[in-house]
Image 1 (cartoon, rainbow over the protein chains, first blue to last red):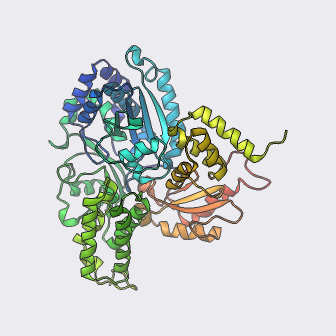
Image 2: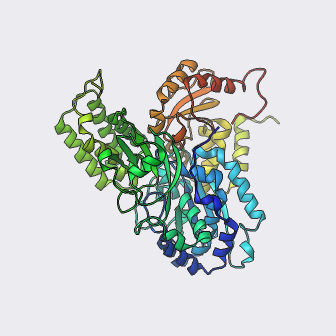
Image 3: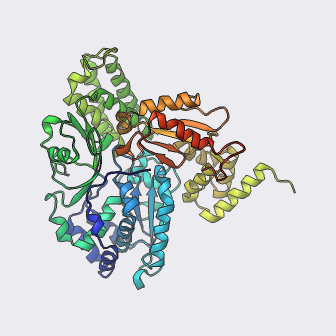
Length: 399
Length: 170
């Protein structure tokens, strides 16, 4: 039985049919205009403005365009998309229809991660119900110039496929190896056609914006990060689960909400994010300060952060697609170094060398995975050097 | 007329290709179906799929070998995947893993000699708020304790033997 704690969500009160009708009664450019004026930024973590993405896609003159919903939620500590697809799938699908209409796509694809196979039957049922209500399929809501259908495609257990170009490669039936960008998917995406790839949560907010208005959305959060955000909270806190909070919330306030005030550090943004030490809990979560896709992992006072760094590095060593050298070879080297630290066999000079390697990976890797693989290692060794150094094998970091 | 296993598999792949489309982008859905049915992608199937889609068989192999959920060697009827990423790790996944090894008599990465169970680790599966979590084929189990491991395995074992539960093994 999967029962997550879910805090109050705006989605509960959204009238999906009303939002969809409101959107489709506007012209395509008006729809994009509304999304742009709401200031909505991609909720997967990168924060690219959704309106801009759709505008670029809409401007292309190709006959075929695609809208892809990225449901390959693989970032450690993230599970909000699972909640959205379990309880608010119609909201997400409506967002896809609106997006498809805005950019002039005829087909939408959901790339659902293999681990969520159990959700598939339920999602297919909802899609079928939408087709019966004429909200999906041929001439949606009687509009002659708009036909759009959604197909579910399954992933097969590869974290890197959350990266949009790797996701497209996978959809095309290839290994999930990221492409060079540019060209961006809005120009050359699925089957070489313009493709907008949006996160599950982004699409749910699109529908919400057409029910509650762009002004309402923009009124929340901060100037650079408008709107609300869904956070996935796990780790050492009293009430792990899914929470909706405005952007700009401080780490301390977030911890108070979830009952994790005694934390010594918080990992924000998952394995590819940063480890924030207690002294920085006043920092704010948003694209201007700590950008995140919503993963929050709380580390209590008893946690050994070297173990945490090792776990993250094992993750990246496994999940690196192996295409470019800095990531493929860098991850195992850092992992080996961290294991040596655990045995108490590592000099500070070697730590500095490993940190330089991490910085090189940030600069030289091809895709977001490699560029962020060393983030956790770098932030943990920066803020918690005394936990990493001078250990011995028998007693770990505890005296 | 007698049909060999290979003939049957060929027929099956041809039907799948008709249904899912004769194009490269159908490769993953086809491989998923074969994986579900056989528990792995036999090399004969790779060759047939390649012929049907007009690509080289090594392309099919390269895709199969890339994804963790597609196998090129037979796995157990039940593949148990334990999440080994940080939140489940902090929630005590190690003890669950040890208990699984003890109950099945195999290590992670191995399959029981009777071909019933495989043990694997998997990366974060999105159940971080209720770890430790594991997947048995498609089914998710959350808040697993070492004690619960026995119960889960017994449920699986119910699918085998003369009193087997008469439903399809996923």
